[in-house]
Length: 498
Image 1 (cartoon, rainbow, N blue to C red):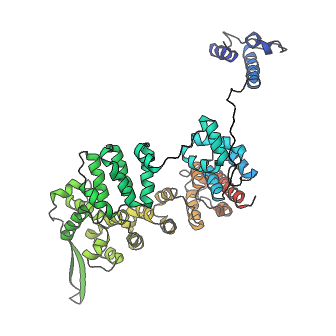
Image 2: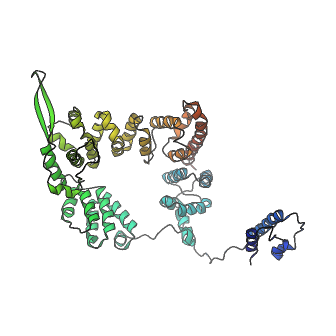
Image 3: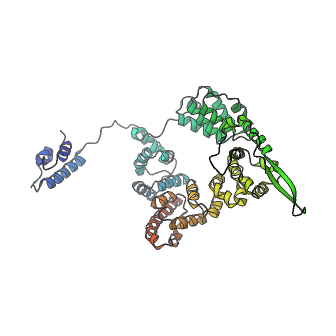
């Protein structure tokens, strides 16, 4: 039995029953010790410590084959020694949000991780797959060489051409290829999918259709509308994609029903001196049976909404919002919104238009709903509408509406890859400082990615009004100061010329 196994056995039996003695140690060190027993427990700890140190210093490294290759010369400069030291500290402290920033800053600066930090980085790549692409980029040729030498660090994969990936690649690789191709060559992505559609599994078909849905095109219509699938999951996925294409037969059928249900009426008001424009809703309009085969539900689960209203709401959610400008004879989105908000019975359908604006990526309508929607509309759709906006606009509107739904808006803003502007960051931290029981140090460790370094000089200005919350905030403020200071230092490390 090996010495360490002997020690473990004594530990499990207990020193009272099986005390550890000097005779249990390897002979190479037992004879060198000047030993005076004290008591069973103390003797166990002393002898175990000696055995452990002997194992640490006397062990032999594992045998490896002779390395005959060398790493190719690097084409990019290394980061500074200071930056490498900073990365080591961040990894040891498990500040992974800041590790991500380090990797991004290193790439943006056109630099590579220094050789001494590569083992820690490659170990991290095994534990955190989301960093692998960035780590591969900053590891350089030496990193690729190390990966080939050590199978445990093998995160790179041999390059394959797109045809091979599509024909024989793993499901995730094929989905990535289709999504990438879809962004640069929509028709090419469609042709790729058509080439193997008949042999794809149901699960892969659904996944591929979800990729098409993210960037629909009128060019997809002939093929999608010709598909005849037996499986319900695939059929549902096809329908879902078609409901995102304005000229599809499904969307056209929805519009036909809505034209009959919503009619503009013009009459006289105030003793006949003013024209009065209103919307008549014919909720009893007949709904063709085939409408219900496209995912439209018949029964409302909300007692305040009738079944027929619920059907019309679903249809309104699935037609381009510009439809209403034509149907209600209004010049623009603002006019339609004002008209529908006049009465409660018509305002009921406005949240559906918010869904439609997002579905059909109509930013004109998204902005109009945010600018001119009433409180009920904003409260029901604010996060949905904000998410549809470009980042810069999203932050402007988020600062404006933060007080309405702060928690939901902050959660949304944490998802973006761009830093918050300073005005928005100050508003968010002012709110989180007042909610110390909800927003703790874990939150700030995530949020530091978005918090601008310029916030550092403002941290002392934030504090909750309640005295009971102030001690908690002081602890969190210290952590926030530490994290933002780190971010500022990383920016300096990669902005300097080395």
